[in-house]
Figure 1 (cartoon, rainbow, N blue to C red):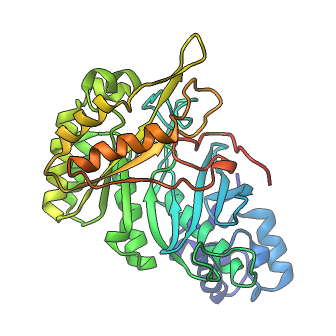
Figure 2: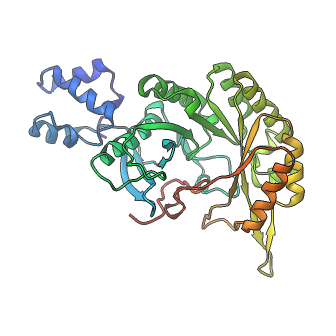
Figure 3: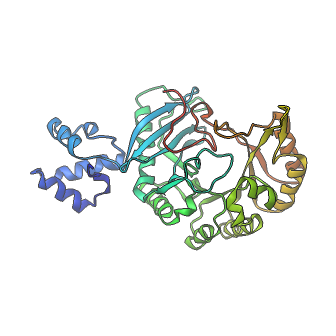
Length: 368
């Protein structure tokens, strides 16, 4: 297995380079390239060509390696299939938006939560990601954006050329972040201190791991918190999200709103709208009837929150269907009538399997 130079301390990197009979200053040059996200040594243009070839044969730059890159048809979303050093694979997504460049990172290889509508959990949990493995996903996206600067291929939705850096992070990829809380916190601290990404531009999404939320409260950084709710009752939520059998809906919300109150931050409620087909082929709403909307409004009335409504995105192995546009808007109208701040979230990259609930392990769906 090739050593990953990004994982070396400065002292270890200097020792590695000098043991090769090279001057110590080469280690500093290599570190600068590593911190920029260089995918290989051939990219390090201020190193001698022979040295670049030698290093490519004996070492690896980052702890993740791009195996496949998929581009959405509108040019605004790029999904990366990344290989880890032990053969596991993860995905991350770069989204070019009107407000900046957002990256959705994975926190685990696989997922143990077992949510019935999601692709990420199909093969179960393999392992947690390290701080460096999570952070390297940002560097992969940053390298892509710097490549964009020399091309007009990618245009932001507002029509501007997309030549900025990563500005926002969402920890919403494969895995449950608060089952890997220490490494996720370490990653966020690093993204803030080394990349200058503000706390309020970082969002962590959880299906409701209460000890993890309490750890975030104790950590006391004003990041954004998103709760994957997806049902307004314990009975229904337990059917589609097994974690609800351990951490019940009201307890999750109470803990999440404590986080929100401490930081005076609006809590984000993620709500995927699900339907199924009955034996006659007719669509039956599963969690998004008018009654469900009223119950959800009762849970959230008077709270500092915003509900993201997300029509279900297709996962081939799951038997759900997306509800009609009329059903989606009716659900939203009921929430708004009850004073709940609500929006229907625009999903990005559906055509490359990078929308909410579509990220998965060991698989990249779409066309290059």
